[in-house]
Length: 79
Image (tube, rainbow, N blue to C red):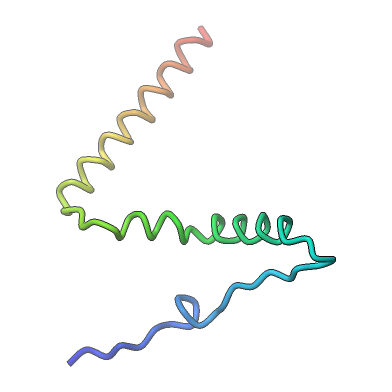
């Protein structure tokens, strides 16, 4: 059977923010920034629904196409 061990980087490290001078709003901003940098919110949203591998490939291809079109438009505007 599979073991249920987690790496230290995945679950072992906790996140905390110190509240100084009862400034909770500042601490909340710092916490939101940390969570955003770690990509936790994005990961939670991605895991809410299962996405088929073919759909992931299709989305990745569409994003690449969009980046390429944007790059071409930028090059065309320079000329």
